[in-house]
Image 1 (cartoon, rainbow, N blue to C red):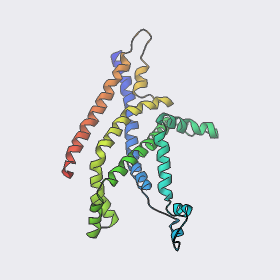
Image 2: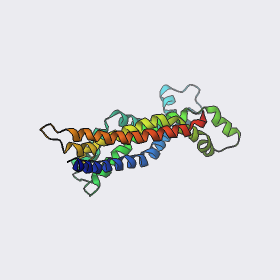
Image 3: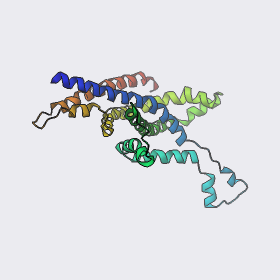
Length: 240
C-alpha cells in the first residue's frame, strides 16, 4: 500500500507543482504591472485648477483624482480582502450559474480556472510588495540619475529595479512559500492535488498515515525553496 500511496501522492504533487509554477510565471510580471498602476499619477482633471485662486473642495478633489491609481487600488483591496477560496469558486462556477455557459468545459479547464484565480490573487499581493520595494529606494538616487542625464527607463532598470529586488526578496519568499500550501485549495474544484490524493486513502479503521505522509512532500518543497531564497539573499548582499 505504501508504494500505491506514494505514486498517488506523486501525481498530486505534479498537479500542485504545475499550479505553483504557472502562478509564479504569470503573477510575478502581472504584479509589477499592477504596482505601476497603483502608483500612476495621471490626473485628467488637473486643468480645473487653472485660473482659480480659491477652488472649491469638490473641484480640488476632482483635479487631484488619479483614476488609474484609484481603480487599481480598489481592485487590489477587493482581491486581498476576500478569501482565495471564494475567488476560486466564483471564477470556476460563476460563468455557468450566471450565463448558463460552462466556459471551463474542456480537458484542462479546471486547472486553467484554478491558475487564473491564483494568478489574480497573488499578483495583487505581489503588487503591494513591489510597490513597497520601489518606494523604499531613496529619491536622491533617482534624482542623481536624472542629473547624469539618464532617462526614466534607464533610471528604473539600472537603479531602482536592482535595489527593489533586494528589498522584496524576504517578503516575496514568504508569499511564495504560502503559495505552496495554498495549492491545496485546488481540491475545491475537484483537482487532485497532494492533500486530496492522500485523503483518498484514509479509512474509518484508523488508517490516517497517508494524510500525514503528504506533510513530507510539503516540507521538502518548502525546504528547497527556503534554501534557494537564502542563497539568493546572499547573492544580493552586495547592496548593503
